[in-house]
Amino acid sequence: MKSAISNPELRMAEIAEKVEHGERLTLEDGVFLYESDDLLTIGQLAGKVNLRKNGKKVYFVDNMSLYFTNVCEEHCAFCHFRRDEGQPGAYTLTPEEMFAYIDKHYHPGMREFHITGGHNPNVPFQYYVDCIRGLKQRYPDVTIKAHTAAEIEFFSRLSGLSYKEVLQTLIDAGLGTMPGGGAEILSERYRKKMHLVDKASTDQWLEVHRTAHKLGLKTHATMLFGSIETFEERIRHLMYLRELQDETGGFMVFIPNSVQPANVDAGLKRRVSAYDNLRTIAISRLMLDNIQHVKAYFINLGTQLTQIAFAFGASDAHGTIIQERISHSAGATSPEGLTRDELVYLIQGAGRIAVERDTFYNEIKVYE
Image (cartoon, rainbow, N blue to C red; front, side):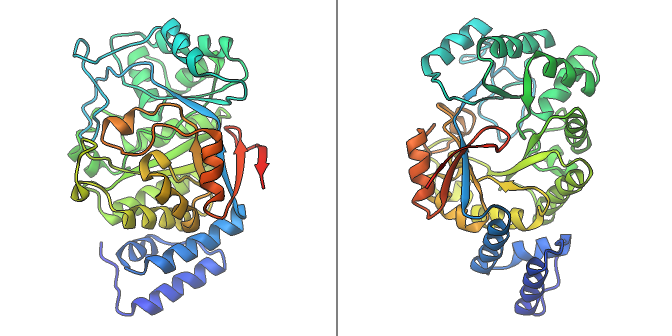
């Protein structure tokens, strides 16, 4: 669709009036914002919404990213992390190998393990359950954030269990929350073009999160933008999330991530622009009126653009991470992780109040 923009200034003023009064933006409003070149007004409106919701606080968590396996049956067009079984660089860690890696980096006060990985059909569902259980037994005070909705759908096919049964089994083993990946763009046209036809569909991704929310899990939501999707598809993606949030209230944060190029040496034309990154963060903040936080993921944005994003509606900087692999395998040039002190500096350097949190946004320490 193409929005009618006979008088852009008047149209923007109408949207600003809606924002001022807390009225919900429509599909047409969102597409107009994407078609507008008035980035500063869009950012100002998003900043106002964020200040209303979160004040000047920007949150982060002391966490570690973990990857059980990079073997995957999917062939997503944007992914450079996956490997086939037996291919050079392919791996599937045992729980003991994972423990050995964690023990090198673990420190008291670490609050979250962020776990994603391949859809490896060469191991049974019980492998994933045992990994979660082993982690929870060894590190009982660390929240386990594991397995995207696409992975849950894969586990369901692998095990013959329903989404509810898969999730309840993982919860019983120690699962505390789910990451938001696997959504990419919630559009079947996009998913077909990007070779996602064997991956969780739009309806399946949403149903997994709906089921998780009904089981008491608070979860995360993402969008992977900057390839072949239209502006309308981006806005419809946000509206799917908004509608499910109206129903369940289970999403804690939204994370818009731009597609990374194939390698770190990729030129400017192969990367999503800073303009589009900031515009998407701001529009996400404006459209998702019922989700508390929008995350500026420094791995994806780089540290300096992350600081600017805090003025465009973002209220979360993710976490320490230790060693991120998926975005960096696809050409991200950001640091693989940051220390707690670096994150505090990053946030305070943008004129914001740094708040260390746990996974569920309970405040641990406010740095003022």
